[in-house]
Image (cartoon, rainbow, N blue to C red; front, side):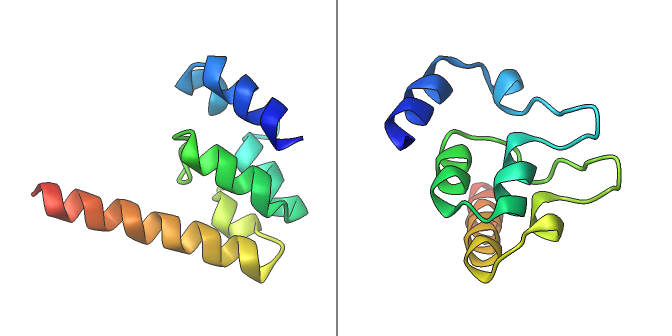
Length: 88
């Protein structure tokens, strides 16, 4: 339920949203692996770090299981890079 996830994310700190499991996977790694575009978008919108590495030194983009997730993550990273360049 995306409403419940949105509510939960709104009360979590960024550190909590970026929490990594014992294997190093974040919620974004897991949503990317299972191909959940809604959850992935919610996590990205909440400010999670898409560059976190798991213990296999993989980002969420590298563990992505579907083209829509790969496109979503790629567009988000390009948008972030563009914003950084605009600030400089």
